[in-house]
Amino acid sequence: MPSIVQELSGHRDLEGLRILLDCPFKATVLREGPAQVSGPGAAWLVYLCPVHTVDLDGWPGTADHPDNGTNPCGTVFDYRSPEGRLQSHADLWLTPLTGVDPAAYGDRWADFLDQAHRVLLARAEEAAAAGEDSPLQNMLASMAVARRTAAKGDLGVAATSLGYCETLALSL
Image 1 (cartoon, helix red, strand yellow):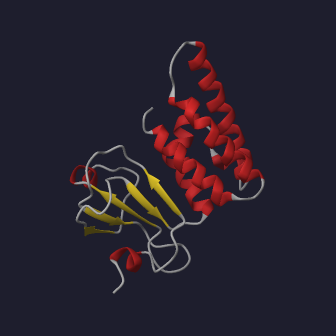
Image 2: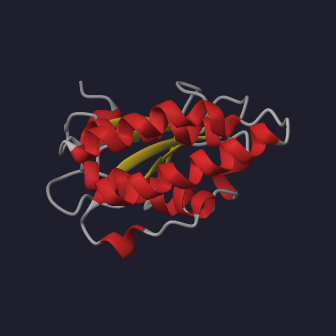
């Protein structure tokens, strides 16, 4: 018997796993994201606690399903294309953090990530010069991987690297 996750995902392979909240609680709800642009199933599934079920801007779902704490609140199963995951990272945290807009670079994700990396590097250097311990320093290695792999055309690895950065960005 297929699980609800398999059914909601359209039996597709998981493309990315993200942690978008720093919440200590187990999920009570599995929120189903909008349908995929192409193919069956939801674009993403997110596990939420009661508080975040009503208080998660930017992640409106098409339906909520009960969950018995199978995952921590904020866990996202992402079934989108690498480009879709990159756009999500840009929209939710990378553009607000850096001020770099992917729209300015068209479909050139490598150029966008290169500029975002430069901004984060400059901000991390400023924090270090001021004697501050900044989580930005920890993000630089993963941002460098995202930038290099996007330049090589591997947007999937770039999006996965940004998933790690997203988790670190929660502490900013």
